[in-house]
Amino acid sequence: MDVMVIGGGGREHAIVSRLARSPRAGRLYVLPGNGGIGRCAECVPIGSEDLEAIVGFAVERGVDFAVVAPDDPLVMGAVDRLEERGIPCFGPNAAAAAIEGSKAFAKGLMRKYGIPTAPFEVFEDAERAMAYIAAANRPLVVKADGLARGKGVVVAEDADEAAAAVVSIMKDRVFGRSGDRVLIEERLRGLEVTLLAFTDGRTIVPMVSSMDHKRAFDGDAGPNTGGMGVVAPNPHLTPELMEVCTRTILRPTVEAMRAEGRPFKGCLYFGLMLTEDGPQVIEYNCRFGDPEAQAVLPLLRSDLLEIMVAVREERLDEADVRFSQDASCCVVLASREYPGSCRTGFEIDLGGAEDLPGVEVFHAGTRREGDRLLTAGGRVLDVTAVAPTPGEARARAYEAAKRIRFEGVRFRGDIGGVDGEREKVF
Ligand code: AMP
Ligand code: GLY
Image (tube, rainbow, N blue to C red; front, side, top):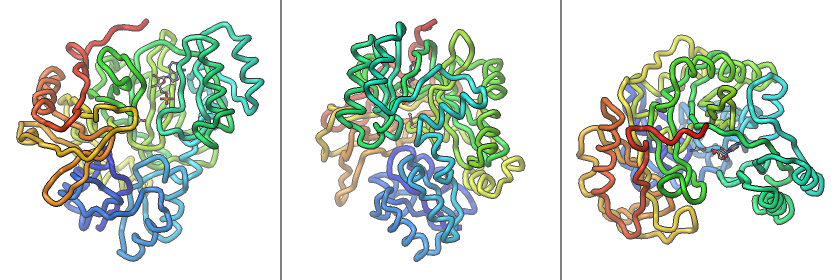
């Protein structure tokens, strides 16, 4: 089975490295790929939003199966376009991808089906949004409705900051049309959990839970980023809480999407907060998390391609989905200026990091120039270690991370915290 994966970051490297292990996998193509993916697949220089070229390539090469990994092509309808041309896909169609593509849709769904989430209002008019903020006497979060490359959320300290967010989203249009509407919601308090789950629109099978570290610097300081590191499983999600999540959030979401005529097939991402009132949904994504996938997929013991095909064929209930009991830790190696705009093109010396036991180095922003490996983005490499305990996984990931050199390399020193414990917020 020849497989095409759309995307070119660390998440796609983690996905491809698992697909490459499947006995059913034939040729593997990644569009566009990066400087590391070429070791396990053929990288094709077609951008992940160039739907015309993607479909053309798939048809010309007779690709048997496609995995659309990033949010933009999913929301733009890449799966619809490929399926129309007879190419089976792993990933939601555009109607289902709206669960990430429109926060107003996602929040409306949760309200309608009683799925726990922060109370909210949607505004299409900046003046009304400002009036609401002025009248509200509690901490608020302001979100652009559409996709904003992970930057469209402002957790406001006070009313002035919330109002400034409305101005930049709706008036200055910093996220373009994603700011046609804003969503203003109550600020929740608690620890965050990511749950990735396979679903075929009926059955939902959660993967190992994980914990992202979104802030740029140690101690959760600095600006929000796409994610600076992940541990899996999430140390705060007890089996009891997992049962509550499945009953009140996971299953109701899959059922709600089906009832709306938008059955979701693919990987559904639940960004949850464990609040005093129980787990609540902070956000849904229509795809694997990045860098969550780089911590979670190395724990998968069964065949990823078989699972993805089973999702597409709506027989996930028969699929073999097993995870190891080990723990993993993924440390993101970033360029000095990240999350600002970064200088790139620096040579990378991996220093034998990949030879350490249980370690895999996924490439995010890298490219090859002849024999040289160069930096090509803000998040450059994702170093994952798997070990029997969280402490060993963390120690191994850091041992590997410290071997890698490039100009301006920077990573957080506290992924997983001390013994996987972080400050309790409530
Ligand atoms: P999102 O892009 O929706 O995941 O938001 C980015 C980050 O903002 C989340 O990971 C949370 O840390 C924070 N956040 C979003 N919504 C809320 C909320 N209602 N209350 C508290 N924090 C939030
Ligand atoms: N790590 C957060 C995300 O993938 O959206």
